[in-house]
Length: 615
Ligand code: M6R
Image 1 (cartoon, helix red, strand yellow):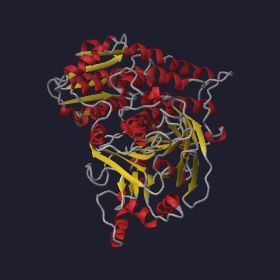
Image 2 (tube, helix red, strand yellow):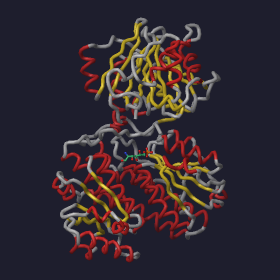
Image 3 (cartoon, protein in one colour):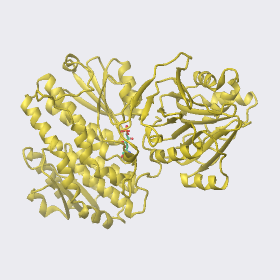
Image 4 (tube, protein in one colour):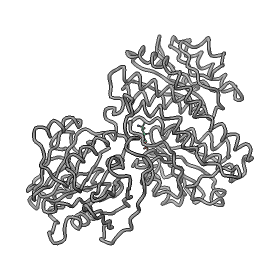
């Protein structure tokens, strides 16, 4: 979703800001702009479309050499993605420039009030309201930061705002409520960004912005205050990854790089989880053993791919701990008045830690007295900050919009949570837990060897470039994998793709089947739970009988599936509960290759944002 950059320091602001915007491109956007302040005047260039359009505009109408600037990539909410609605928004006299991420819910009322006072609006955005509101409040004796605090007290909704004033060169002011904003502390220069990627090329020292806070940046100072003007403490941290991690590193797309990084990401997520006594430790688990023993229900909340990881978590948690577990889309959760008590543990899964639906759901859960554990990839992001406990996945930055390594590490992390609960509550013996951890520890090498066998999957994808639809079926943990395979194909290849619980097919979706329709089946391990395996084989027969083209993902050595496969993709043998960690990989490669064959932008699919910071 919208990307924001702010800079104040000795360098050319437009160049630093443009570089930051490039690094934030992955968030998804449809227009972009930059404003700088120099010699008491503001200059601004903004353009609909991708950054290349902004760069061409800058080549024609270059900005003055200035050392204070802000920039924005906009993902449209209020108003079409055109030049006029692009950010920054300026006041009539070009005194203030503002960029914004989020939604100002009371913008219509404020706009009416400001129009009554004589302000003329140039766009349809809610953001422009803030520019005029700041202008109406601004007092040179009190400065822009004070105007921002006063303005924010009048705003409803979710927002990150960053502003500059023509009279205040050397000052950038930011504000945050329910929307992400991070400060980068440099030497003689300071930065603002929607996330640390915006300034990671300059500094790895970051400061978390709390809820309802305003920050005032000068080249040599950073002051954080609450909306009421009181000084807020500064929470500084060091970013564990560097600019190189946020580059493509020789891969054609970020998605390809991130798929390839999965063995390392899984390995990093498992690192340091066993102590000297051989017990499982989750360092960031701030809930006591007594609290964990008192839990009588678990509710998992998440969106999109993270929701699929949550579906897998339900199987693992219930199997190993016998605690009843529900999984719910975060966007639906709070609107059905869920039954939550002090003994409910809510697990919020989010790669970015900023997804608004998940954040609002977790806040609702805490208001009802439930305890919340976050499973998150981004250190210091809002969801873990507002949770009672956190287990971090250590996937490193995920830039491509389509989630890959985050998904695998989320599945690993929720397995760790399930095993930890089993350890604390005594539902599994220590050696059983270590056995499962050993199996998880074998995943990186299995993913690595699986990745080496993906050429036939890429060939298959190319052969399906003209397919109208692809269906995916699976049972048990294979069902969320089927949903994930379909989601990847929808978001990347813009194709009709559906995932079904294999047994549910005959209750309706089977009517979709016709000659040659590609159907991907995820077949569970034939070991142990062979009933499940046999049931999926029966479902495959039903599909084949109707002329569909059967693409089967099955365990190496599963000879039973061979006669039924038009295309067979094999994955290493692992217990059923862990199979999603492998079965998802060919589906990622498949969707990426199919989208590439269709000539689509794999890293930034249309209409999508990496982190969805509005409800
Ligand atoms: O950052 P989050 O994990 O909270 O994001 C949730 C979804 O928006 C995300 O998983 C989305 O579905 C992915 N683009 C799918 O690839």
